[in-house]
Length: 429
Image 1 (cartoon, rainbow, N blue to C red):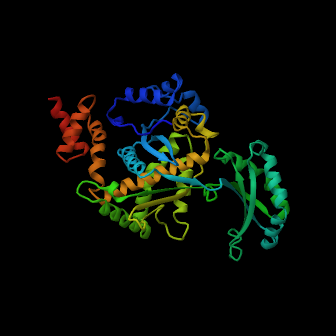
Image 2: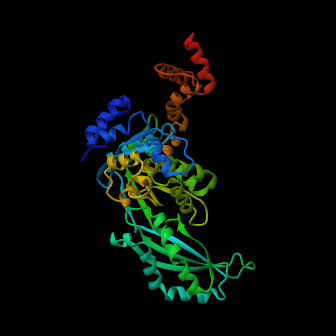
Image 3: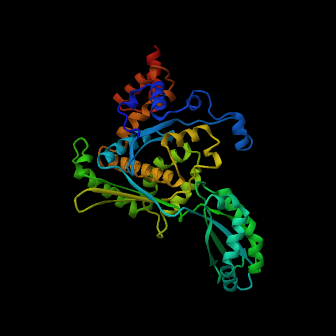
């Protein structure tokens, strides 16, 4: 098992990092070429992925280090433009690995397809009629996508709800049928849409109503992944702050987010700072994951924290997260985009469930990184130090000048573009 603990990685040159990755993960020459300065996603491929293509848009691809999840080492590719995220996640992963690593698990992996029916003469009778024909409907859905059945997946169940039955407007009265589909290692959007479109005429015949929408739901609450970590206070000691003080500060910060939607939004954005970069790096749909995660954060009637932080009987800090994870390792861009394929290869991901477990673990780590910073020195100290290089570049610095200007910005505690421009002019003179 290759260790994700790589001391000094941040001090290496880009070429040195690439060589280490190639040697550690047995990457092919072709895979390494995809990490070169030339665009890994060719215009030809891009033009066949979406419409009206004019080029490609790149993000920095960094490596989250030190992760141990369910006893397995993970070096995690993260595509993101924001400074300090990769460093923060790696820092917390180092702490958690000293405490035994993250424990993660997945529940059943079922995606949801919805069919909307309106105009039923009696919605209750229509609902019961669909339930009576459950086997017929599930079989017909499987017939629409037989390849997933051959791989061991396919429909598993259905249910039916009546929405707004007593409403005054006939536009709001409707019946909604859900089918639950095991999509194996695919995210399954196209699969679900094919199935619900195929059985829509049967639904109309059974209910006597008219079908309008038939599409998947991105609220994948039957495809949940969770992660947990337990950290002794001594591992949290930071500068002048004791581990107990850091632990208490993190829990107070969590309670703030759990009680106030205004704080919860920013708190959860920090969690998604850890989640989205992996979803992007692996070619998955980060908008779907974002939408599902935020909906799940409001499942109890008020928008709140996606994580929980508490103290156990031994005084340890305990962190937990559970979120819908509609991700896959086959289909879509996961095997079309060369860097998505490379990212999955580096992590040695064997199933969509495993990928989901890695993603939520990194989300939990990133959350703790933010809360730990907020509870001690404040978020700006570390973030702005890392951000100073971007500010220096925006101010016109290039080459070796970047480090010089960045250091001056930090020393003068003025990390802003205007100051960077001023320092660049002074440097040139």
